[in-house]
Structures are given as structure tokens and as C-alpha cells.
Image 1 (cartoon, rainbow, N blue to C red):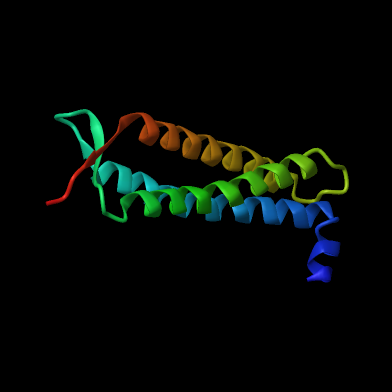
Image 2 (cartoon, one colour; image 1 turned 45 degrees about the vertical axis):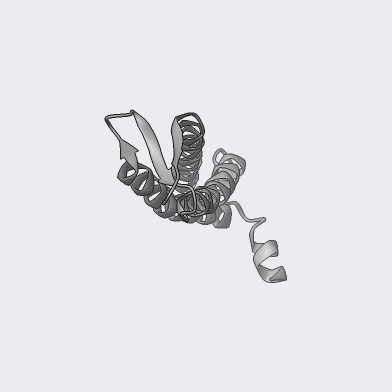
Length: 123
């Protein structure tokens, strides 16, 4: 554990971690987007779900599992992108932009769900 933290001081390790975290954060985002698209009701223009269903906890878990690594990828990419001792500066920039993009899309999806949600009582 301490070796990992010590190696994170190196900018090329930060670049690799930024890219990895940003790419990993895309998977739960895609799951959240698919969940939202599946529950989208085009007649009502709302995201519908059953009151007792597991949709909301699952969606929020996917968004949380996506926001955390994307934010870390963004921050690690930001801290290592312009450094002279970074051999993988392009990885830092990709981690920075991809992490920022995924975090922004997560936030937009969360806001869209919050504004367009419609709970349907189950009989």
C-alpha cells in the first residue's frame, strides 16, 4: 500500500493511473445510461420507475461508481499533464479530458434523472 502511494509521486505512474481510472469510469456510466434509456417513457417524456423497485439505488450506485474514478482520473491527469519528467504526458491529457467528460456526463445524467423522474406505484 505504501509502495503504491510512494510510486504515485512519479508523474508517469500518475499518467497511467489517470488513464486507467478514466477508462474504468466509463463502464458504470454506460450501465447508468442504459438503465435510464430503458426506463425512458417517450410518451410522457419522463424517466419512469416503480416505487418499490431497485432502479433508483442501482442508478445512483452506477453513477457513484463512475464519478469517483473519473474525478480521480481527472485530478491525476491534471497534476501530471505538463510535467517535464512525465514520459507519458499524452496519457495524462487523455485521463484528464476523459475523466472530466465522464464526470460531466454523470452529473448531467443525475440532473436529468432528478428533473425527469416519475415514480409509478406498483399494485
